[in-house]
Length: 127
Image (cartoon, rainbow, N blue to C red; front, side, top):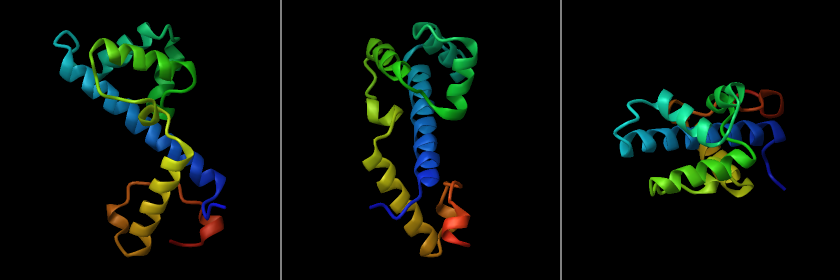
């Protein structure tokens, strides 16, 4: 039984998925001289994944989902990038570990080191 709420799990999973997607974009820019910035990289991945414009825009706010994760990994493999599925779509165990880490940061008085803003204040009270 987790000591974190479903909303906290969902918020952390989304944050980690966004971080993974942004990391993928930066890696693509580093490895392809023809892609000068992350905006172009995002649309290049979107084109490869056969995604609509609205789906591509949503990736920046929610991370990759479903079939797009596998297609993005195929795209990354073309560049021999070292990125795995759990980085783009984090597992429950990874989400739990990051919640625990961040919770310990906040509780130990190092809240400024925390980047997570998805705490369920109703369930936790003031952190």
